[in-house]
Image 1 (cartoon, rainbow, N blue to C red):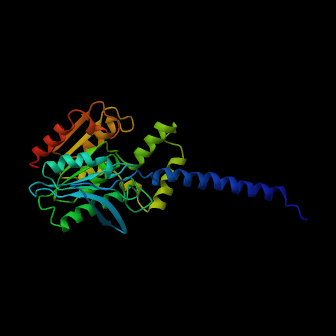
Image 2: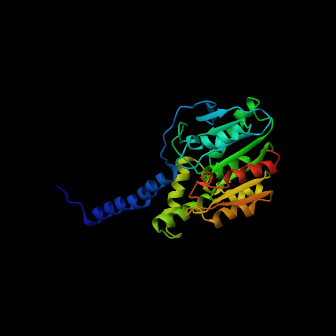
Image 3: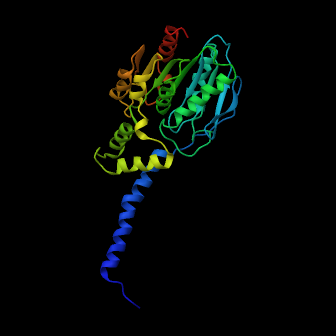
Length: 289
């Protein structure tokens, strides 16, 4: 039996370790960016009806309740790892006010199709698909109000750009940009510095796996192009998205705009705090909605 020279074994070992470090680690880390845990779903009850909204090649689960036709239709969008089921109370309040309401499960969430998430990269198309769904049924004659939380907030801000019948946008806890929020959370949860090379490598792999451009997920840039009035909500006790992050999005918008701090609210928890509905409904009234 021929014994391989030491340099061959050393090269093979180096290739193995190099592949694990430079391919395996970014690939595994990218799963944290594009993967999602689906929350449980429920069957609808009156006045909700479950509908299927086509978005690109996916079928999205949504609940819809038709209003009185006198107010703008509302599309409500959840955040990462959540589903429309968490927003039935919000939708119910809007429906009681007369709005047609569509609660949407974004791709790879709840009961919708898809396996990968992009923090708003493709999800903006899901929101636009919901707008098209309502328009086709004659339910958008009074225009639209878009409401989103966290990733949903970024998605609705992006989706509203260039849509003249979107008459108002309400965003709770939006992040500023894809790269910015990944770096922030890597530092917050894992203590990783911004220069740590694993982070951009994982983002690059996530872009390849989910077929999107991370630099295009930029709520600050989108807010600068948005013409609809904007209400941004900063959750007062949210360590994940501090005020300076939300304010970057707010400062970019040309107006009309309002920034409200939900005192005592954790991430995505504003609707459970005092003053939420007074603020949201007051903003809609100001816009004639």
